[in-house]
Image (cartoon, rainbow, N blue to C red; front, side):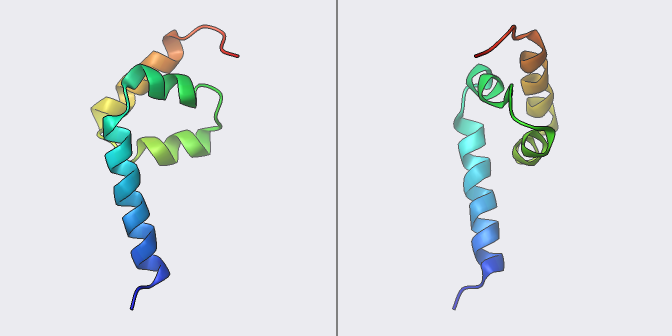
Length: 65
């Protein structure tokens, strides 16, 4: 039998795997307009250095529609 806790951990592992496969620039573009809570949650699934790189990319992006 599975619990919601199991499901949550699977979702986190799946999210981490997906985040590692996405190009940094694409991720930065996608997160540019999202709120801080979502950015923090998603970036917590990748390495600290990768998260810093994504944040740098976000800061370099100009206006985005």
